[in-house]
Image (tube, rainbow, N blue to C red):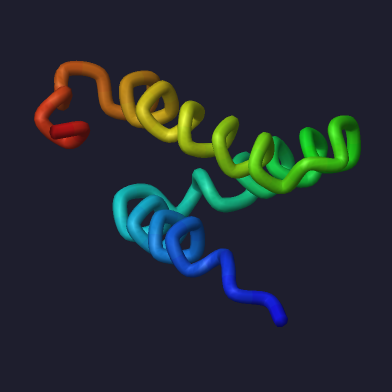
Length: 67
């Protein structure tokens, strides 16, 4: 029985609420990393690392969005 994924799904919803344009980029990173490593957890971690970097690039000077 599958019991995981709820946390990363909620994180994806928060990311989409902040900036919907991160969804296609995040999916590319996620799918690419899972295809290379065969680990879903690596894809989830990479997308979680990508999010603050994405916010800093898209919204310079708005560091309060990360807190």
